[in-house]
Image (tube, rainbow, N blue to C red):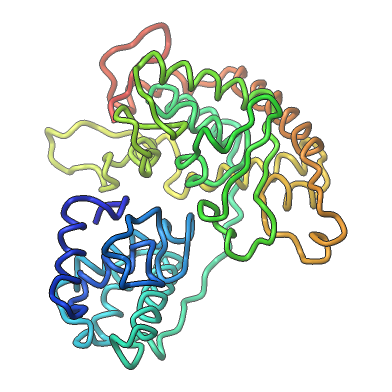
Length: 378
């Protein structure tokens, strides 16, 4: 299922659902309709072009996070009539994921879609009724300095080196960085404004999500713009692909290889002819660990106040009382803290580490210049 929800195939399937005069109830067609941004007005969805992600009322990051689960539901049950889907079949799709947290997110995504179907009279009962969420162990992992160097050194060989560094400099969410648009950025003032539809808490936040950008991040954005111009790419997205499109989860292939896996996440092949894969990072390292690592460093290394880290840097929704009596966010204070962290990050990267010598062999590179290869095929 295309992430833009507007591919030719999707348009044809969405068109056929309306041309029949009756809203068809096959699950794959309903999933296409549910991914449309015009859910509230089905009669006009045929004329209106989808303007982004909205799944059963979720928008932006929340909808995008649910998309992989909706895709799995489409692959496994897409050819069935929605009224024929049983609780056992839904449970089988949920259990297809390995981690309890992933299974819980899948269950939430399915429940949201089924609630949408009930509101539109497509089914009378939610087949997930009675299913309970599993216990999740809260993640508290913080990256070590060596792990920070390993990640940045590896991504410096790819197209998305500046995207990863931007994550480390700002503590933004992965989808906020990958979907970042030039129109959201005031380079002169060093302020980023994320619209509600592109932000995870956009639906419950009564104020715009604004972030102060440290000088290191502004300089990195200027480098990225020069890179795109030199490549001949004209795009609204800051970290655009070579075709100007929004990048998908472009971090995973490199992260998988750093874990000693294949680029698609599968374990190394056991064939004797397969190349040896060396794990340079533990298997539990994720991209979201960067956000937690920066927050922990701001609190414990830089000494920033916890509420500045929580509500201004991380951008978690503030209590209503704070929004009412302190409506102006201290972006300057957050920017200063991130600037100090940027200096600390530069010092971390300058420290000698044996990981630099191990990277080329582990990542399967051919061309090597100085002590690191310059390109890493995706």
